[in-house]
Length: 203
Image (cartoon, rainbow, N blue to C red):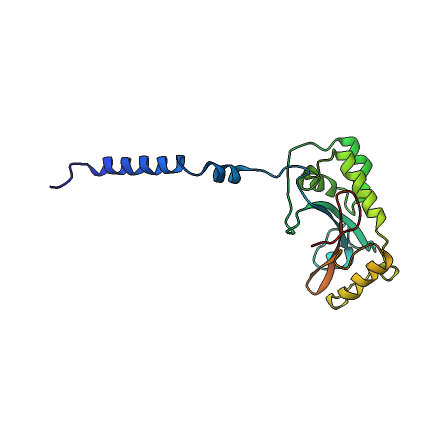
C-alpha cells in the first residue's frame, strides 16, 4: 500500500528527527566545543624576541625597521606542553596608565594592546603584573655579544646562535631556545621559562 504521508509531512518528520538527534548529542562534547581557555591553565612561558633585520626583510613597518634594531620583545606567551597555546582568554581592558608605562617594552608602541588581548589575558595576571613579568624575563636574558649588532642572520647560523645563547645564559637547558626563520633568514628567537620565572625546556 502506498504511504499516505505527503512530501511536506515527511520532510517535517525528518527535520524533527534530526533536531532530536542533535538535542541528544553527548553533552560533554557540546561543552568541549563551547569551552574557552582558562587563565593560568597553561604549563610555561615563551619569551619571544624578534630579530628585527630578519623581520624587516619581509615587512616594511616604519617604526621597527630602518633604525638598526637587533632583538626586540615580541611577547610573553603562556604555552601548553604540546607547543600549543591559549589565546584571548578574556576581554579585560588594558588600563591607559599601564599602557603608557610599558609600551616602550616593544619595538612598536601599538603592540602592547595586541599582546595583552591575545596573550596577557591568559596569564592569570593583571595587566601591570603581566607586563612587569615580561620586562623582568626580557631583562634576565643576556644577548650574546655576536648578536649585539643588527645584521641578517641566515638559517645556517641558527645552531651557532642557540649555542651562543646558552653560553651567555648557562642556566638555559639544551632545548631551551627555539629559532624561527622565514625566507632562509632568522626572524625570531624564543626562550622558555617556567611559570615561576626559571629557564626551562621548550618541549
